[in-house]
Image (cartoon, rainbow, N blue to C red; front, top):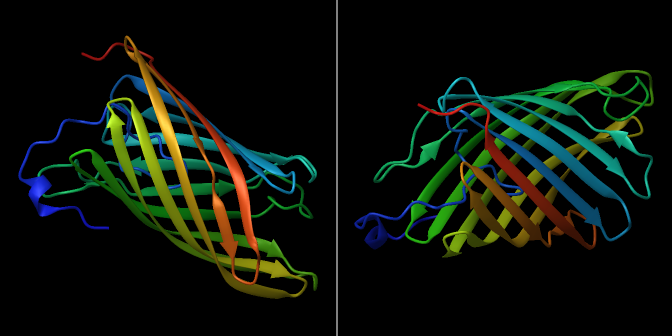
Amino acid sequence: MLWPSVARAQPAEPFEVTDNSFFVEEAFNQEAGIFQNIFGWVRHRGGSWESAFTQEWPVPAMTHQLSYTVPFVGGDVKGRFGHVLVNYRYQALKEDKGRPAFAPRVSAILPTGSDDEEGADTGWQINLPFSKQSGDLYFHWNAGVTWLRGVPLDAGTSVQLTIPQVAGSVVWRTTPLFHLMLESVLAFEQAVEGSLTLRRKVLTLSPGFRRGWNIGEQQLVIGAAAPVIKGEGDDIAFAGLLYFSYELPFRRSK
């Protein structure tokens, strides 16, 4: 996505809510002394649902960040934990005039089930998020890849799966603490079917909003979205998403 050159000539007021997108990662680490708790929940029309809890910590300031993500699925499928991620993100670039923020992330994917259950394999994930403000608009774009090893086949062997994806979003600040969002993700999924591995493209478009409240040094953010998902060879699927974030200090910044 491109941002207008005219807008870059004028200083932009900072957004009061950042790093609260749902599908597209924003390129901002946590500030010193502040940690964030994030909960997201997605329900699909068929009745299945997915949730995830993430906690982010600066170590000790904005340059380095550690976090973990614990997912869980349920509904019309057997309830279980998904792959747990342990994440490290480096604030390589802070946003400046003519320069986007850039914060590459690497994640270790940990096994969470028995050998014959989904979630038993391990792997890595790399994502490269960029973010740039233009007036009342924020543009975010990502490119990443996930590797999963030890995924079992019917024949008693295992394979490694590689899943690249690209993503982009635009966030419109209608008021300082209320934003409209449009996110898009294109994943080149690879999955096991019997003794074969198959690859297909899955596109997600997700309009939504987020609303924030500042309470002293704390910030609450709620959000909702209506993802529309189209997999190669599949009908269009619809889902609903709810989001909650709570940022608070664990020590006072100097």
